[in-house]
Amino acid sequence: MASAPIAPYSSSPLGNSSSQHTSRESLKMEPLAGFVSLPGEERIIDKDIIYMCPFNGALKGKVFITNYRLYFKSTDTETPVTLNVPLGVISRIEKMGGATSRGENSYGLDITCKDMRNLRFALKQEGHSRRDIFDILFKYAFPLSHGMQLFAFLSQEKYEENGWNVYEPMEEFRRQGLPNNEWRVTFINKSYELCDTYPTILVVPYKAPDEDLRRVGTFRSRCRIPVLSWFHKQNHAVITRCSQPLVGMSGKRNKDDERYLDLIREANGTTKLTIYDARPNVNAVANKATGGGYEGEDAYQNAELVFLDIHNIHVMRESLKKLKDIVYPNVEESHWLSSLESTHWLEHIKLVLSGAIQVADKVSSGYSVMVHCSDGWDRTAQLTSLSMLMLDSYYRTLRGFQVLLEKEWISFGHKFASRIGHGDKNHADQDRSPIFLQFIDCVWQMTKQFPTAFEFNERLLVVILDHLYSCRFGTFLYNCESARDSNDVRTKTVSLWSLINSDTSSYTNPFYTPESSRVLYPVASMRHLELWVNYYIRWNPRIQHQQQSPVEQRYKELLALRDQYLKKLEELQLTDSAPSSTHLTNSSTPNAATPNQHITHLQTPF
Image (cartoon, rainbow, N blue to C red; front, side):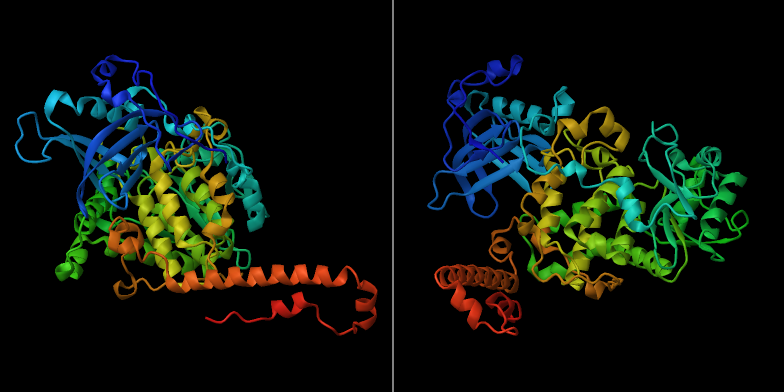
């Protein structure tokens, strides 16, 4: 990937009236040593500023704002302190203090970020010194609110591999053993006519004609009908996903929907179809008042209904806010356990994990399941993807995990744009919620309990979350596949998987041991769950110094050493064999092992 140092920038930064307030001083763009820009990234403004660092106090330095990031470098410390913040990470920008504010460093900007940190900058009080930087930052951090494009559409990055080719739906279904005489592929949604938030390729019961699917769609919220997510090759049980039925207060019934669920059950000949409703029972009942509801036992006599008690997006948002309050900027160690408990964050992680364990166990036992919440794009995605991760070792590979995210989250319409708020200034939007972060946290909990079962490492999970917010790639933009298609995301932006797959060694777990048939059942009790310190508290300098596991670091060093010895051996072989190849051939015995064969059997001790 080609990249170049950011060049000095001398023209007016903004094409509207706010540029007139930009001082001459701020437009003297200086080259910044050690700072490499992305292709397509442009410098907008730089300015002398004071960063109110919560760990090191007030730091004088210079802030550089581009169309992609905010970069700060201190100038008054022996070891420079730097900040490198993609503008997509910014949730809120506020002015701090006024022209008459008293006290040192009381006038400036407060920036709230989506990645568990807040930033505060102070400026001199004279001459509206913060107006230019505030206007520019506000415009470029929230481009969609200003009629501008997200950076992903401006990026000029190039990679050898096209990450958009990672997930091919038909290829993935064939890997699972589909279609077959129980399940068929339908293209009824090829123009998003059946459901505008579903993908174009769907797998449904073989005996269900397309006309029936349309009738079932009228009885499911947002027309999100039950469709197959995963097929168990051995026992033919399936995981299906959908939205809630439109039962309402009057207890409506739909014979087509009832028959359709019977077809799902009959596909592998089980007596009962288990329906996992992710919501608490009381919430599901309350949804009847707004036209939703759940599958009653009178209407669905061949099904059993299980409520998983996972709370809604608003509860999760408040829980993360409480967590942020106790981890940034400082951790109060004296009341740490009670403070953590009061956030309920790990409690929610436990409920999501235990729900997924129930789904995986039921399918592993040969029973088909159907999973839904209200609309089937938040808690449903958490449960289907986690249970598939437990059941199918392919999804535990680096490539397979990318396929899992593309399939269960991106193509099936998790509302990334609404939940994250890409490029949108409305920080108080009630649609914002950390549902995907919660899922990645659950994956991390599994990697901790099964350290050899996953081909990818913790760094991959952190990088995925960083680019969930950054808007550098098109992977997580928009709410559904139809919106991505209409905005030409695949042709106009780069996929995150292009970055990941161009440097797979950085994201590979050195302890990985492939086990194709193993089902993982993590322990979801509070005693076995822990806070993901390397993500939630990573901005604290004390944590930064101890992020890499010493065992993992040592293991990587030993692997590198082994590679050096192998290379040296090859060189020696070539040197020895060149002048006396005849002698070597004559003197070798049939059972003599080559140096390479010997090396393969060497044990690497810790």
